[in-house]
Image 1: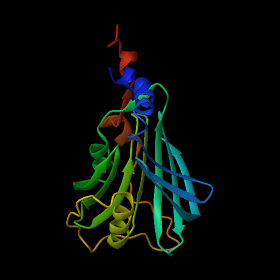
Image 2: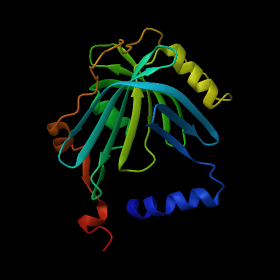
Image 3: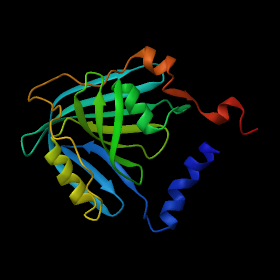
Image 4: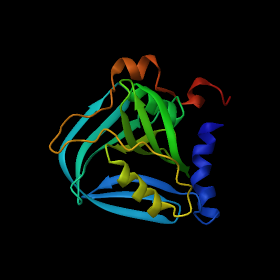
Length: 203
């Protein structure tokens, strides 16, 4: 039923007045973050771009210099039309960053704010969105003060959970992405699988 749900869900949301919408995207110098009726646009100048593919998964990576001087990493992973992500978003992120633990700070309408405890014990701030099963988008490397500000602007009524202050940030002019995508990870975990209806589950 997941494939049917992917077709019907966007229409259902519109019929309900668009009350469950989220988006995280980067286009033409603007980082756009939307959670329900809150829509933020942040200036971000690209300083480095890389693309890759892992068979049936395609990856776009960009380093963005924000207006306040911070640099963050932006990544967008999209499956082939006949494939979908196999795991829930939190599990996918845990695998991609080889994280020990993912502490969810905020979740609403398929949008997450989280702190990742990495394999070496360091902490990484991350914002992530996965509206359907074929696209996963996330940014990471911002300081905790920026995470708090983002949460306040998106949802002033949200409970402010304790956050770790000392975190990994992305140095200026860095070209090093912290995610650890590989063909082995994508195919053997597996991070993606053929769409369920292709395996005859709907017949």
